[in-house]
Every structure is written in structure tokens, then in C-alpha cells.
Length: 83
Length: 290
Image 1 (cartoon, rainbow over the protein chains, first blue to last red):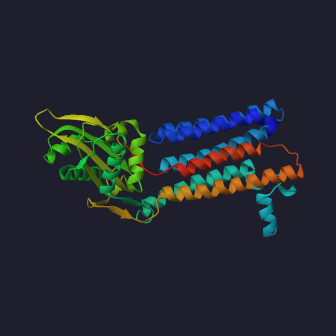
Image 2 (image 1 turned 180 degrees about the vertical axis):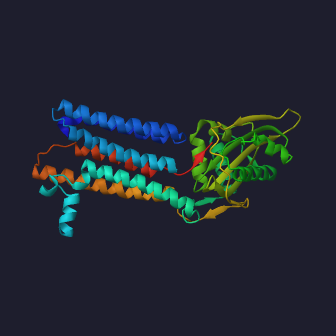
Image 3 (image 1 turned 60 degrees about the vertical axis):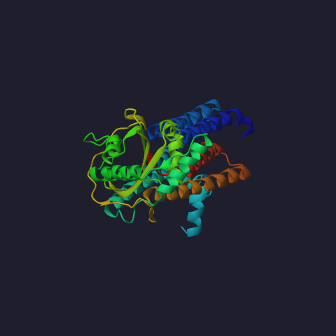
């Protein structure tokens, strides 16, 4: 974790920005959905870039980040649309 | 495979699952996402077929909406609004009109404006405004949502308004059980021409499917205690994300202790992302405003 600290700080910052956006724009569902998509896409992009920089990128890793992002998006979409 | 081995296979890094809990494999995560989508489809079907079981849980008191509105005005140094029974009746009529004609908007599909309800009930206004909310479980959540929206907040904190009326109606809108709050602001005419001063930003009219049943609520309080589809979705999501976070935490510990080398994403990154999703699940509340 310590050797990846700069990378993780950028990830935490991005996730915090996404969370803050979802809270601040609670009155605009379409914008909330856009923020959720942007955060999920950023998360997958972070995973790809992080593993490429550490020279351990494999397609299976991309699929893993993508699956986690899709699951998170499904949950957020379900809740925002139902709310 | 015994139950214990199956649990280990599903939730703990082991030789049988290639040193990664089976539930964390991309295919398993994809299946969970598909299950959630299927659950939403089933919920929508159930919502349509059994609206009395899967309806919306609400406990809205018009008096509480007015009290909380005045709390916000007082916090901003503004005078309290006085409840006007004519505005109450006009707001109630607007709510019932939305249910009867099946629309969710400031203006009815036939062009009826919010201001016509003021006039029809004999309230000649100098200034007038309207806020709408639906599907909130309590008055506080609705007022908080209005305060979070710049246009609705502008209405609540408008110094030109002197009076307020609240209508809370419960019924079926486009096939879904709902509770609508109509908040009318006004200042009675005293010689000046009538001006609709502020209105919350209008959005596209929702599908104008006619309401199948309409239950007119009394202006006192609307309260029922059935579970909403939102609550079902929220609880299921909490369960799934909580389970995945637990399995990821176990994965993090086991992999470090056993110094397992494997090809895979960063467990801490997944924990961070799903942690954010968990926080979002916890803060999201039901309800819409226009």
C-alpha cells in the first residue's frame, strides 16, 4: 500500500469527489447518474493505468475492475431510479 | 462438496478457487449484477400487480411541513409564513388534479397553471409560488430536498411571501402508489397586479397515464406503513455490498498472511470503491421534487 500511496491517494480523491457530487446534486437525478457513470469509468481507468505502470496488467484484471464497476453502477442506478 | 467446503470456496482464498474467493471472480460479480437487474424487473412487476403490498411508506403532516419551512426561514432571518386555509384547499386541489389527470408537473397536460388553483379558490395574489414533492417518507426529508435545490430554496426563502398552504394527497400516479406534497406560497393582493413570482423549475411532464385509483387524503396527515420498492432495493444492496466488503477484507488479510502471489486487481482499490458505494446507499433517500 505504502509504495502505491500516490496512486491510492488519487483513487481516494476521485471516489471522494464522486461521493460529494452525488450528495451535492441530490436534487438532479440525471446529473447524479452521470456522476455515477463517470466515477465508475474513472475507477476502471485507474485500475488499468495503475497496473500498466506496475507492469502487471492482464486482460483478466481489466475484467475484474469492470465487473466491480458494473456491479456498483447497477446498485446506484437501481437506487437513484427507485428514489 | 460439503457445505463448509462450499463456503470456503465461495468466500475465502483457497486452492479450489485459484486463491481468490469465488464470489470475487468477474463472472460471479457479473451474475450478482444480473441478479440485481432481474430483482428490479420482478419488483416492478410486483409493484404493478400488488400495489397495496409494495406501495410507498409515508408519514407526512402538513403542519410539520409548514413548521420546518418556517424553521428554515427563521434560520435565514426571515419572517414566518402564516398558514392560509384557502391556500391549503388550493394546494390539496392541485394534488388531487395531478392524481386525477395523471401528471407530475407544475402545469397540467391541458395547460392548467398552478396559479389557476389560487384564483379558483378566491385567493387573489400579489405574489405566488409552488413547490412539489413526491415519494418522501416524512416532512423533514421533503423540506431538506427542497432546501438542497437552489430553485426550491429560493421559494422557501423568498421574503415576498407572507402565507403558505400545504396539500398532501395519496393515490396512484401512472400506476404507482405515491404521496404528493404541494406547497403553495402567496401574498394576498393589496392593490398591486397579480404576479406568479417564483416557481420551482419546471421539468418535462411525466408519462400522462391516467391514475387507476385515487384516494383523497384529508389535509391533516397521510400515514401508512407498507414497504416501498426503494426500501427493498436499499436493503438488498446493503446486504450485497456488505457481504462483498467482508469477503474483500478477509481476502486482504489472508493474501498478506500467506503471501499469496496471484494475478488480480488491488483488493484495497475494490474496498475503496465498494466503500463509496456503501456510503452512497446509506445517504440516498427516496423522493422527487420539481
